[in-house]
Image (cartoon, rainbow, N blue to C red; front, top):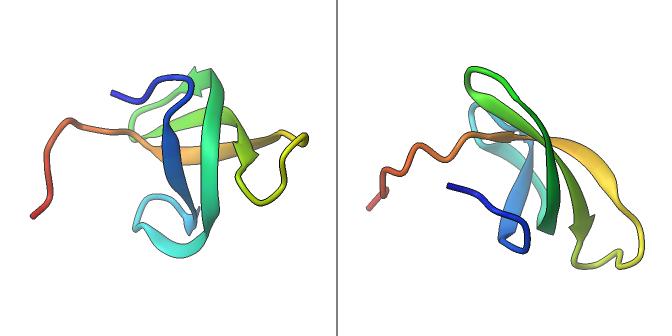
Length: 64
């Protein structure tokens, strides 16, 4: 489960995990839908600015 302070990769297409935008620190959750969560984030290469992004829910399964 994602929590504030975690560092995640943000994707342009979060459902298919395509088109990586960059690494960001999670600030706070805004909303949670079926497969997506909306978060306020701060990109590691753009400190001091926050953005609202959609992130695919972490289902707890590990991919190997």
